[in-house]
Amino acid sequence: MFSPNQEEHCAPTKEPVKYGELVVLGYNGSLPNGDRGRRKSRFALYRRAKANGVKPSTVHILNSPQASKVTTVHILNSPQASKAVSCRGQHSISYTLSRNQTVVVEYCHDKDTDMFQIGRSTESPIDFVVTDTVSGSQGGEETPITQSTISRFACRVVCERNPPFTARIYAAGFDSSKNIFLGEKAAKWKNPDGHMDGLTTNGVLVMHPRGGFTEESKPGVWREISVCGDVYTLRETRSAQTRGKLIVCFVWKKGKLNGRICPLSEPLRGAFIPAVDSESNVLQDGSLVDLCGATLLWRTADGLFHTPTQKHLEALRQEINAARPQCPVGLNTLAFPSMQRSRALSSLEDKQPWVYLACGHVHGYHNWGHRSEQEPNAQRECPMCRAVGPYVPLWLGCEPAFYVDTGAPTHAFVPCGHVCSEKSAKYWAEIPLPHGTHAFHAACPFCASPLSLTQGCAKLIFQGPID
Image 1 (cartoon, rainbow, N blue to C red):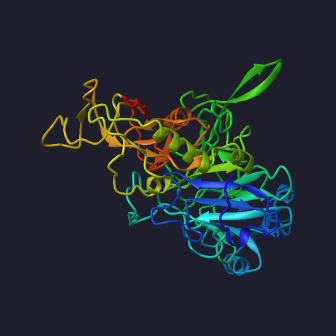
Image 2: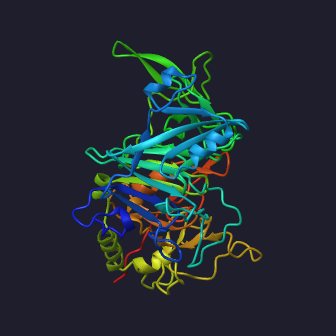
Image 3: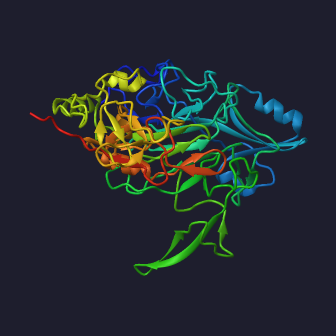
């Protein structure tokens, strides 16, 4: 379907096995200044030539006999702990309990998994460099970020090397010294089975869509992933030191007692369990991963096989232009710009279609119909139906991974004007994406512009040629 990009050391040269792709929301096929090296708008995960996964090992246990079934835990004083952590050949996670005590969990090589790390850092352990996404960024220049909220070593994805190639996500990534450090202020705890766990400063949130990533998909529930891959409800704010809790009630179904996850708006007393039992950190086709500054979409290899290709989107563009849509006022022929120009949001063309988003009527550009002389770009009145609302140029959505079907581009997001299929537009208009430390709102996947609360997308009304 897609021509795989060169993924540095991740892609074998002969018949590579593709686990899937991570695609950054807010970019229409590429970064504003182009994809460069490990910094790009999408990252393909291939089976490595040699496994680099790690897993908890069992070496020493102190004060936690039950933990031997799960992990290796060293409880050491500060000098010994620092010596253990500084060993460059050993992966480890360090939980600082106090100035004089640190819990170090050692990891050993896992021949059955591949590990990929995502974060803001450009150091060598990071496979996919991700920076903050600026909502509605236009043109070919990137807006500088004064202070990023994305962790330098944000998360890691671990893929099984054998079928079904299950991919799991974990908060935090190993640094150049092969260590993960959770300081005194980080949220951390010991689970009932004895193993340590914790959360990163701003957290890693995951949402699995209900029904997969298809035409019938519905939004799932946002959860937080821990360093060890457990699933928790959201904290009160992204950086709160108290982890989320799970509220579980029980219902009878087919003669069996099953647990049901209740929303936080349905509080029940007495049944608090720290980890979500019925959900997991396994990535599904269409899963969203939020790093507090950028949101990633996970597409499986099978899911990508059923998405439209670039050639398919280009064929749809040419089909629309071949129908010779006209401006109902100027009667001039309209045409969508090329895919390359749409990706870069280049300067507007003479035949560029424009739309009145309040009604969906598509016109050519004209400099009249303003409702206010003081605010010429605020509201415009459609000459066809007198509806008043935003008047914006239309750009095709060029990132195939964001499409849930192969339908024609008939709908535009409000208010940015990116165009895609009806079901794709309605799907993203229903997805609440994390924004800031505690807010959620729907956004255009092609530019990350927040969508209108009253109208997330609009159906386009084209006028055919009058012959």
